[in-house]
Image 1 (cartoon, rainbow, N blue to C red):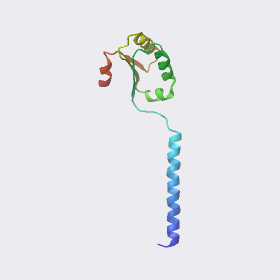
Image 2: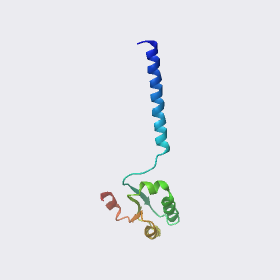
Image 3: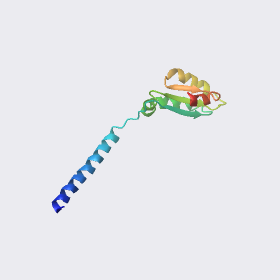
Image 4: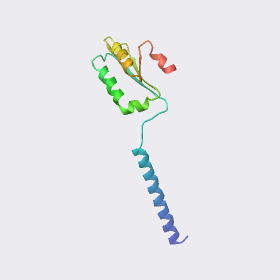
Length: 112
């Protein structure tokens, strides 16, 4: 091959690498968190003071809504001694994505 052939080949290689990186960056910029069906699981224990804020902020999060759009946001109460479970059951009625499980029901979510 002549020197001109190597120069042309080098230019095409540089253009190809540049195009590849440009395409990757475009994909990353437009990336949306979406999964066809996914369940997010949150384990809580004795969070009476914080649980309402946690659930409300999670429901406002685009990440949580986009991930669980065809699934559920499952909250498992790990046998709390306070009012956490009652608060969760109230929030479950307000938010369709939220599914609350008690400590005794926890294994059933993994075998749906």
